[in-house]
Image 1 (cartoon, helix red, strand yellow):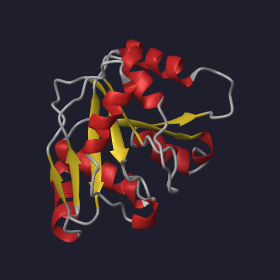
Image 2 (cartoon, helix red, strand yellow; image 1 turned 180 degrees about the horizontal axis):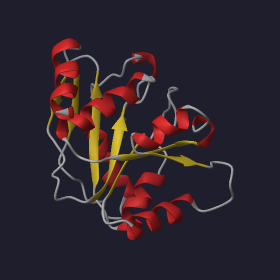
Image 3 (cartoon, one colour; image 1 turned 60 degrees about the vertical axis):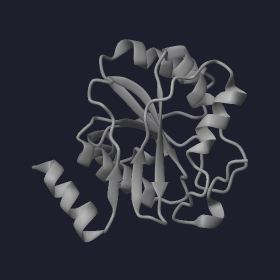
Length: 184
C-alpha cells in the first residue's frame, strides 16, 4: 500500500520516475546520492526508497534531531551523527555495518548542499573497510528521475575508482545547477 502511495505521489503528481533498483538480496551497501544541492533531495530519496521498497538508512547532523523532528527522522531511517566528536567516523560506521544484518547507508559525498570541487572520501573508505559495494544514486532534476545504478565494488585504487564513480554524474545537474558537482 505504502509503495503504491509513494509511486502515485512521486510519479503521477510530481512527474518523476525511478530508474533501476537495489536488489533486496544486497543487505549491505553505501548509496551515494549526487548531486546534493537542495533540501528537496531528502524527499526524493524518501519517495524513491519507498517505491523500490528497500530499507535505506541515512546519517544527518545531530542538530537536526531535536524535538519534534527527531521522531520523524528516526522513523524514516535516520541516525544522528556528532560531527564534532573526535572519533574515527569511518571506523565507527564500518562497525555499524558489522553489527547489523541489514544496513544500506545513503549519503552525499559532497558533504554539503553548496558547490564543491571534490568529494569527501569517507564513504569510499567506509565501503572498503566494511567490504560493501557502492551504489551510485543520481538525482537528475533535468529529466526528473532518480537513478539507482548497479553496485560498484571499490578496488582500493581511489583515483581510478573515483574516475568510474564520477562517470555516472557527467551532464547531471541538481535542483540548483550552480551548486551541482561537476566531475572532472
